[in-house]
Structure formats: structure tokens, C-alpha cells
Amino acid sequence: MAEKFVDKADRTWVAIPAPDYVDGQSGQDLLDVALQLLQVGFNRLALDMASTRAVNSVGISRLIGIIESLAKKGGTLALCTPNPAIAKTFQIMGLAKKALVCRSLQQVKDFTG
Image 1 (tube, rainbow, N blue to C red):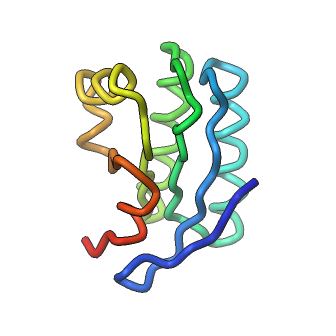
Image 2: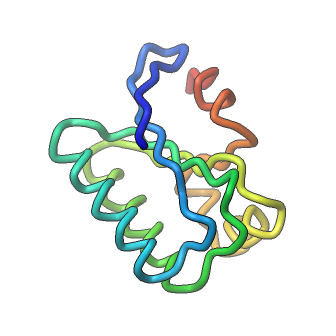
């Protein structure tokens, strides 16, 4: 279930829980949700990855699709609470340069940049 919150810079975000495994289908489901949220005016999304144990290459491509879609609308994706292996993958693949990688949703709520 999605949750709205406002950061310290008074911007509205929507937090979306990620599945335990992000693959082609679950990644597409996340992309579809992101596109629906963009259509109704939300361009800052926080993907809560606390329960995610793995992301495959097709899942990564779907996350890139979300990042690119949000960027076109001046938005941002925050990848929150990824496990160390996923965080390292995001770093190696350069996703950490295109999205926020955060230790927690609270870090996004405290975001002022």
C-alpha cells in the first residue's frame, strides 16, 4: 500500500513497498504504479526495499524505466533500505547517481536537497 508524506523541504512523496524479489513482472508492476502516480501529479517516489532480498537484471531495467520517467517530469526516485548486496549493485550500475539510495524512509523524510 502506498503512503504519502512530506519531506523537510515541503515536497510530497509517495512511498511504495517493493516485493521480496524484483524481476521482470514485479518490476513492471512497480513501473505501472509509478506511471499511474505520475499521471495524477506525484513525481517523487520512495521505493521501500526493506523486504527485498534480490533484484534481477530485468528488474533493474524496470527501475531504470521508473527513474527515467520521473526525471522527465522533474522528479526523483528514492531507493530506501536496500540490503547491502542490492545497494552495491545499484552503486556498480550507476543507479546511485540517478536516484537517491537511502538507509531508511526517515532519511527521505529528512531530505532537504
